Amino acid sequence: MKHLITLISIVGFATVAHANISRYTISQNSPASETDGAVVVDSNKMNGIYISKSFYGADTNGFSHLPKASLVTPLNLNYVKFGGNLHSVYNWDLNMYLESITGIQRVYSPLAARLEFVQKSYKATPMFQVNMMGSQPAYDSNGHIKMLNTADEVHAANAIRYLNGQKGLGVKHILMGNEPWDSQDVHGVAIPSADEYIAKYIKYAIALRDAQESISGDANDLKLWGPETAQGWANWQTTHPADCTVNYQLPGHYACAYGNGQFNEFIPYFLNRLAAAEQDRTINPKGYKLLDYLTWHYYPLFRNQFADSESVIKDNTGKQNVAGMLESVNLWTNWDYINQFDSASPKGISPRIVQKFQGWRDSYYPNAKIAVTEFGVDSTENVEYHPIVRPLYLADLVARVGEAGLNTFVNSFLQGARGGDAWGMINGEKQTRLYHVFSLFSNNYLGQVVSSTDTYGDKVNVYSVKTNNGTNVILVNKDTVAHKPALSHQGLNGSTKLTSLVLPAWSVTVVTLPDHRGDVLVQQYGAKEMGIPVTQ
Image (cartoon, rainbow, N blue to C red; front, side, top):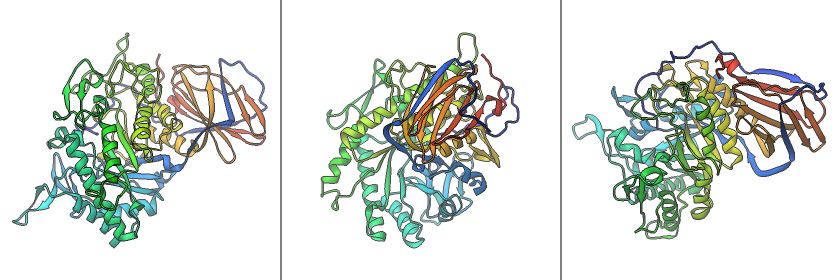
């Protein structure tokens, strides 16, 4: 969910033109130097998780112009997503959507052309969101274009027939709507109850499978991603009054009951209903599979009041609580971490988001993969966070969720709206700080996840993968001081120890250890390259 209010203005912090990623080599036999901690990597110990290119994706920003290929291809993206709030009011056939300020608009380029551009120029796989909300620009009985409730499962299925049948694009990945329980706040459309949503979802899924089967003969050539929920703040409940009542004593502040009281959480109920519908030939005559990826969106929120863009959390000195914001990335995967700072999840509990969705999936729909299909720090545009927060939070998140078993991570956004915003990896023709951080992972965190430990607590976090030619070790230093670890590596061909490595304050370091003897490549990107002064 992205709330468009006004363009961000970063005026409270000193800004300096930033440089690209630093690269240098060090010798495996360099003389020992003083160290302040230890990092241990064992490439012989694998956790069974393989990070492939399919882990990485980026969300296009509404209907903003797509960046040129020379800027995008270095990101090594597998997926490019066409989805979000504006796609919830988009008519693919007329290629028009409703913009909240300027009214009904025509997209600058036809849908098929944009999807084909991603395939051919970006060498990436497009993901397309169907309109499940209902409202879209359409011709009324007098031939005038107005917002009408004409988007339904037939209209969505016709998009598949057009894209994959008539145009032969082979579009495979379909996002099932967008954040259905934000429709009232964003579009003025009443949110659905759990049963209303699930009934609509099943209709759409069957219609889409039918359309694809009529084209290729295999309905499962389409991959369905849903429910695209962003309800972390409500502990992933619908909040619809038919399902939930307000209870401030509970995490998320809602007590909910679904399926005549058989379930008290929405996602398990959703998955259970889909599994049952696959066996029910009265509603699903061909027994279609109804879900391939269990998905959610997440926008960390470090403000005391959502309506107040200036209420960014502070530390005891009155400055922005940067350390607390960066610490809170633990709520994604750490069973013992109690959320104190992020209002996008209930506070006072351990959200452990990835494990929660894994558990639901494993219990009720075990063949689905899991994916984050939107991520960005804060969902409101005019919030002035300290400039290190967004890039360093992203740096400590990507590999963390990868090694925990997330199948796909889609970053928001590929490009900035209206030429630039705080989320864009590409603003105009400029590669932003987020671009450089993301590219370090999408080009280096690829391979078999291996054992990595360190002695720095949460100040420095280490993530490692075994590649075809060596081992890539990624170290994220969230501390305001540099660290000098002794890095020990056990590989197939023996052990290596590096003692000359320096991790600058607020930085990401990628160490590439070759399988055989030779120089070690070090890549670094942090506060220095970003032009951000490090403050205690």
